[in-house]
Image 1 (spheres, one colour):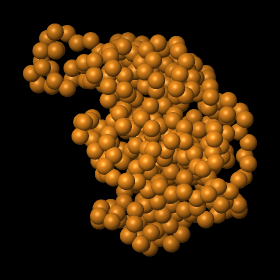
Image 2 (cartoon, helix red, strand yellow):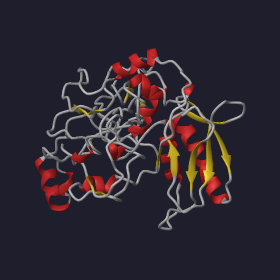
Image 3 (cartoon, helix red, strand yellow):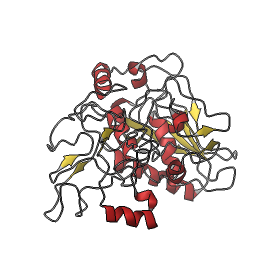
Amino acid sequence: MGGACMMANFKGSNNQEGFNDLTDIYRLCWPNGEIFFKIEFFESQALLEKVYKAINHWNRVNFPHCVFKLASSQSYWVTSIQNNSGGNPEADIGCLHIQDQVISLPEFYPDGSEVLEECILHEMMHCAGFIHEHQRNDRDEHLKVEEEGFDYDVKGIPIGGYDYFSLMHYPECGLSFDRNKELRKIAGRATTFSAGDRAAIKMLYGNPRDHHGEWHNPCSEICTPTKCVCNSCGKIEGGTNCGYEGMNGHWTCCLSEIKESECKSDHTGFWHARCKRITPFEKFIYLLIAKDKICTESHCGCGNCGGGCTYEGKFGHWSCCNFTRHESSCPIFSKLELAHQYDLKIMKGNTLPALSYN
């Protein structure tokens, strides 16, 4: 299904000048997943409350892998400040091991629109080491760039496939979604982390051998192996339908039914089940009132695929590489590569050049 399907996303930690491999990428990660912060110079009480709500939101979703903590005696931290110059929000990318990196937040955008909690979460993602989704090198398959300032990040490390649901994807502003109705419907509307956002944070800040998905509890007796009605399974928040078929508890990443286990897959994406079969009568009804519910080779209407996957067909597949065999190794970028660098990771304490994105 071209233009559909995907849960893990780019999440390329920004690879600044002089960075060559994953070892260098890990230099941008905050040691032990602890992002120390200070809050200064806030005149707007409303904006300050949003900052604290965003921090609580982040920690609730991403604990224990990556959390924001109030700085005390640390040698480096990020400072969140109010920007009254009329510009856009900005943040330094990753841990620069310095004391003057910032997240700069105006109360309003230059067009007068309000800076919302999800806008602050977007800047916090930058601080954790992530860049924009639409800067990955396969973005031309999904959109057209109409303004300067949206260069590819050619040295970024992609984890998973393209993610329309990500907090790091812009709306149609300087970008054209004319050829992609699904992207126009989804991108830039995230109010929380997508499944791919959460997965990438787990993989970079936890042990990549652990599960990057979520655990779904067993179904009740009223469910079937292909249809859940008890809400234990089904559509994943910030993504597509879970690819598991069965009644047992399972992980959404590798579909393992063993809760206390390592992830069985080295794919950084998620498994998408084959398109759901519909009866001739259902197809007739859909043709009359909901044509978008019908699956074709290039469009998924059943929800098993969607959100950035470039797979075309009706078989099950991995969102990161489009491989149709579940027991396979990812040819693009695997968790094995990430895990190897994780084992070699050494905190070097280098001072890195500052680089900001808004």
